[in-house]
Length: 168
Image (cartoon, rainbow, N blue to C red; front, side, top):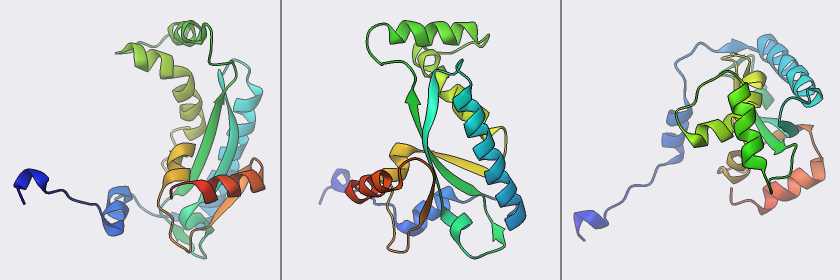
């Protein structure tokens, strides 16, 4: 076997280490407050028609669902959906929205991604105690047999079917 044929595979422990944080753990009461405030921001963002994306689905998973008083953070998966059809002149609409935000962007891609990032930044609200995962990552992530989640927004059966059919 040539050295160029060698490859490495990350183990579950390696993935856990990559996700690990050196930050101080939070109390259960802080986690509950964090999740309540997060869901309040979801409601506010969905009510704000200036955002070009809305939050369609939210699930909480990870250590929040374990019977423990000290957690690393609150893991939530969020499914953002564009409020306008992604056909026709959507690129111009997104670019105009980015230009009107008063921010500067290094690339064209950063500018047209701004409407999505804007909602995520609002939802995160600079809280270290919340970790937001994309819906795609959540569906596709490797899930142990003991994996649990709780639907906070969205159709429970539809989400269960999607997770069952996912690669994770």
